[in-house]
Image (cartoon, rainbow, N blue to C red; front, side, top):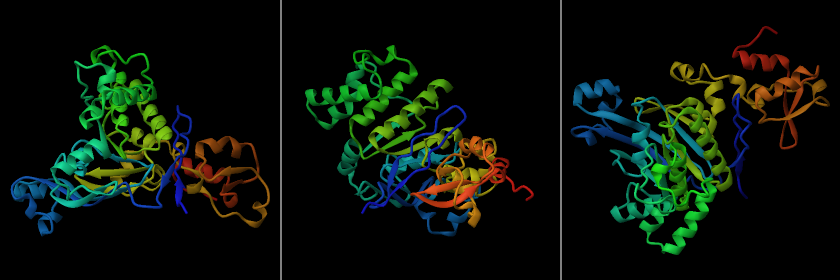
Amino acid sequence: MTDAVTTTPVADEDQAVRPAHHVDRSGEPIIDATGVWKIFGPRADRVVGTPLADLSRAELRDQTGCIAAVRDVSLQVWPGEVFVVMGLSGSGKSTLIRALIRLIEPTAGTVRIAGHDVTGANAEQLRELRRRTVAMVFQHFGLLAHRRVIENVGFGLEVRGESRDARLSRARQMVDLVGLSGFEDHFPDQLSGGMQQRVGLARAFALDPAVLLFDEPFSALDPLIRRDMQDEVIRLQDETGKSMLFITHDLPEALRLGDRIMIMRDGAVVQLGSPEDLVGSPADDYVRNFVRDIPRSNVLTLRSIMRDARPDEAADGPEAPVTTIVRDIVPVVAGTERPVRVIEDGRLVGVVDRLSVLESIAGTELAR
C-alpha cells in the first residue's frame, strides 16, 4: 500500500495556488545524504570528529587555516518532491549540491542517489550516474554556441552513445515540452536569456533522470523572466513528477517552488521544514529575519490556524479543505457568522473563525 502524501499548495499575491502534487514516502528517498562535510584547507580530513569540528567557521579558519564550507549536513529528498536549499552567499548551498554528486569531493559523510552509493563509487560509476541518473541545470546555461537548439537538447544523449535518430526524436519531444517548438534550428545567441534557460531545462529532461539538480539557475535573469521560469519548473514538475533539488538565495523563489526548504548559514543547517513551518514557526532570529516580510496569509494553511470544534460547531457551517491558504478563506469567514469547518479526507478536523484568521495574519494572539 502506497503511503503517499499530498503536499501543501503555495500561493503568493500574483499567483494562483499551485496544484498539490504527490510526494511518495513509501520506499527509499531518492537522495539520502548523512553527515556531509566539505572542508577546504590543509589537513582538512583531520577536522571532522575532533573538537575542531565544534569551532565556528571563523575560529576554525584562525586556528587551522581551514574553511568549513559544509558542516555535518543531512537531508533526504523523496520521489516527486521539490526540495529547496536556501541561503545567502557563502552559506555553503552550492558547495553542498556539488558534493552530493562529487563534482567536489566531500570531506566526510555518505550520499546515496536512486539507490547508488555515490561516496563509494569509482570514476566509471560516477560517470554513469551523471549520464543516466542525475541531471544538473546551472546558472550559466553552458550551451554549445556552434550547435543548434535541437542538438544542444540532445547533447547528453549523444554523450551517452544513443543513435542520432533516437536522440533527435527525444530532443524534439523535450523542445515541445518546454515550449520552444519552432526554434529547433536556432543557435543559442539567437535566443533570449529565458529561452536559453529553457534549452537547458530541455537538455536536462531529455536524459529522463531520476532527479534534477538546479544550482541557482534563474539568478542571472531579470525578474519577469525569472518568474516565468519558476512557472515553467512548476509546470514541468507537475507534468513529469520528477524529483528536484533546487538551490537559491531568494526566499520568495524558495517558498514558491519548495515542498520543503532547508535554510543554511555558515555551512550548517539552520531550519528544515515546509514553507508553512518556516513562515509560521521560524527556528531563530536568523530565519525570522528572512521571513518577516512574507505575508503570512499567503503561506499558512488552515491546518496551522484551526482549533478544535465545539459540539455546537460540528454540525453545520461552511466547509474548506485543511490545505486551504489563509488568504483564500478570508472572504468566507467575512461572509458568515458561523466558524468554517475544516475538512481532511472527508472528516472534520477543526474549525477556523474570524479571530483565528486575524491572529494568523497579524502573527500574534489577540485578546479573546
